[in-house]
Image 1 (cartoon, rainbow, N blue to C red):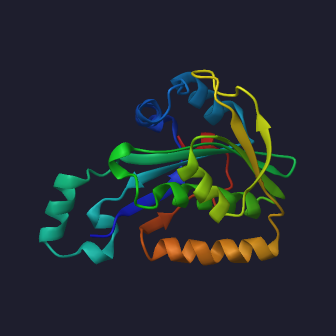
Image 2 (cartoon, rainbow, N blue to C red; image 1 turned 180 degrees about the horizontal axis):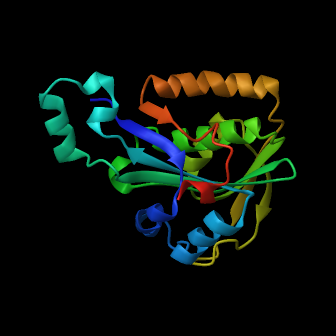
Length: 209
């Protein structure tokens, strides 16, 4: 069965689950207070989560046996991934992306990245930057797919082991890029059934409490 998720802004009530995924994904995770600050004090911060959808929210799941199967395997309200982007003076800085280990390899990381890029373009972002571990070739392949290029290196960037970070940039986020992004967005929609409540959500996240 096709995975079905809701793409929406992060809420304060999500922090506990987000921190759990963070700890499963990174050796130096953010604290709950860091996420709380991002949600309540930074209008430049755009945080997104992927929530497993309930069967009732999807017309495709109207058969009586499918909701029971879905309920056993994927409880509604469970978060399976999250991402963060800072949008300042035209720069869309992808700060974090993580997917729960049980749901990796299904395109969810790509959906998070594409969602943040779409929102950045709608909010007049001009280019995007991010840091990635030099050893994380899987993430680098995804970023290359979305036209990021290595433009520098941050020596000993990661505190846990002193590994270098590659600084990558996608530029420009112009109309031509937006059109190519839309093609990739449609390709994702053929693999993952999702309800996009994020890319056009312009209100600061604190209004989604």
